[in-house]
Image 1 (cartoon, rainbow, N blue to C red):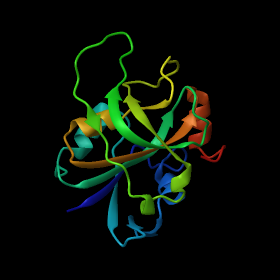
Image 2: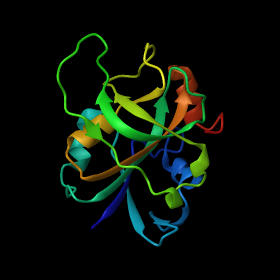
Image 3: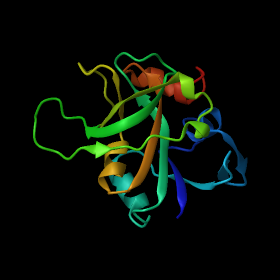
Length: 180
């Protein structure tokens, strides 16, 4: 079974590669991440949003082990909070319609740098940056529900809160102005 860590952006300015070493136990081995348990994980940069996710992951086997790590916004979690996602949903606050529940597997605690500081919550994926919401105790991203919707059977997700629904703050945190 192949192992993949999924990030949306890898760039030097705004990127999520740095989150791997900050929040997952292990070390870089070339361009792969070696977890503390010895498993090697290939890093895939999906790009931001649904179409990029579908294009970049369409040939990955459904039984591959995946970890999505990246930035997310939250209406009320503190910037820098680490959230292990337990369920992914789409963010469509103006309409209700039946959708499947997209459960996300927890990460083994030995994979985490600081497991006792990790929150657990729902992640709402949106097609655009969320600038306001009445939803509390959750995070917002632009990829996870689409990744989960592709039917992967071993998907985990760790989100680091970069902002409180502010595009400006996200850009500062992702660029390293604030430690995430």
